[in-house]
Picture: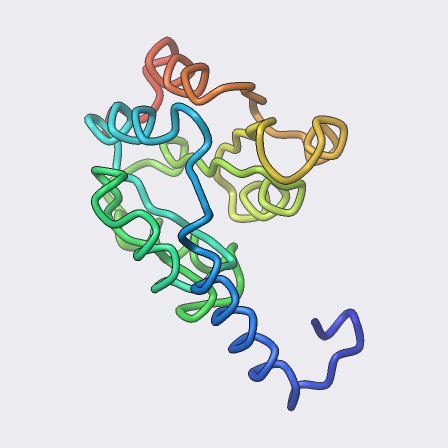
Length: 161
């Protein structure tokens, strides 16, 4: 918002309005096909955190009971910067090698932030940004379906922690 020239004094009000809108619209939101099953499968052998620009309560309410295995949701109300959130998780799990951390995102910014935090990145092509934008961020891998994401981790013995 700063980069767009929005005054800091107006930001809290805009964020509150946005969070209210998200809460009101939440009943119309749906998971992408295959996401709950992918999360459940990945959670069998991996710690799963959701790092988001949305508010923590909105995401927690949305996933309530739907995505088994999510350890924690880190929304914008906990920390605005995704790099800091990734590093916080890394610090909490110092017994895990940095090479075993993965950040999965659907925007160019997500992938750039994961790369900046020093973790492996996977871009998912079914989300917010186009394949071309995702490729510009140079992720470790791009996957086209939730099932392909599960296969990536299973086939490469990724995330054995």
